[in-house]
Image (tube, rainbow, N blue to C red; front, side, top):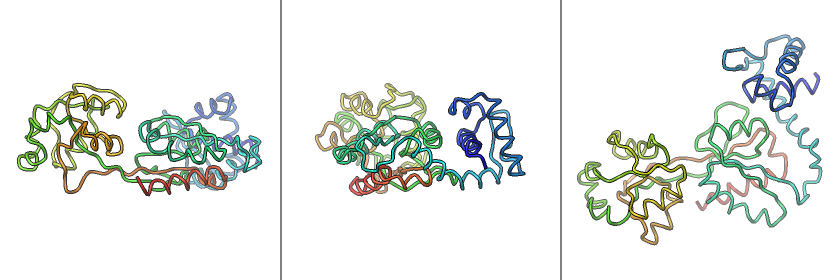
Length: 299
């Protein structure tokens, strides 16, 4: 089979669309369509089912992608000229949530930077991270849930504990953890909410897991799309928020914020470290992958 056709096929499979694949490859959409049709004639089976919003791979298409992806990725790496595994200019392209990547992953990788690894980090949503990993723009992706499908390999990285926090004066007004344990979430009525999204996703998941009921309907007094900004607003007295412990650990230790409740079983979220199959054959990616897993044991 023509490697150019396989490269186009893999781009379409990862992008889920002829249009997006054409943009990634620098080709016209008719050219991509023609190459896929040519490959389908060679295979003798359809590789994609066409739909209004893109394409869905057939079973044969998934099987072919699973077989060729590691080899094409390795050839692309060679084509980039990265022939010397010890070269100091090799770059790791890392993506993940902004706070976790900033506070956990990047500091953990600094020793590898001292050894000559370059890092190019991108803060992305889970969907953007998955797409960038699939189309080759990223080497490693940190994800808050396990990706589906056989074309990515994901390893559990660490568990993230969620904590309900506020400034101390709010704990005094509510009665603190003892009052919440006795009265339930009713003890927290009237405390304003600070969150990263209008839908209050962190608060909703916390209420559902810990109190086994939906939170009362309310709007966030402050909505800001960065957990570090949420922490600073909470420490200044704006209200309560649900935060990962790694974000607020230092503030808790210093008394800038306090935990409004301490459930026996705290809500957790597992982060995953995802790669394309075959990419761990590249030494700089494998080293970073191993280094992050080792560092996460202490997180």
